[in-house]
Image (tube, rainbow, N blue to C red; front, side, top):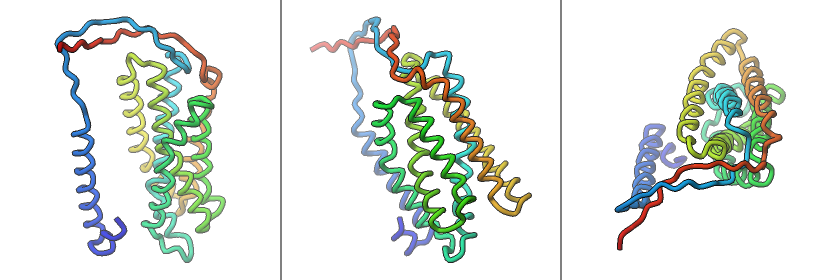
Length: 250
């Protein structure tokens, strides 16, 4: 993408990303297997679930909405913040490269840690790290401070999504798609509201400090909403679900 941006500017970079997305979509499509069956039967199966009870789900939804509201402030304004740092010149390519490099292994790392530490506990830790990363440019308005902020942003925002949706699936395996739909909707609402509020704060104060501090507080409050679920981490609960058993005729 750096090469495309150099030779064809931002238009070429976007076209290149579109072509890459089409190729990856095609590869995923041909790898999908459509399993057909001649008959199905229902079978009740008892599966072990590890995590908070279903009545705890509203806390997860609220926390995830606050996450969407808070994290997007850094995602929206990090380049503008870079432009205010002397001798940095607002290098968008460099900043987003740092974010991307940190994001690449984040889902795998946080998922692996969650299996050992517990999903709720890891979700709290990631949100605390993200809140700190959001406020770093306020505390250290230098190139180093921005790099630290970009690293923590990249290392957490995709990991939080992975942990939250996986946790929802573990709590409600039978209705996980509906709960994940709620999570996605409130997250999207936060993404729309966050930049609007942050823009007003930045305009009123003529800097991004108040917007960043507010965003960090929002994510921190979200993490606090999750604390009540830590005691349920890795606690086995048996859930009975009805599944379709497919029988293939040879």
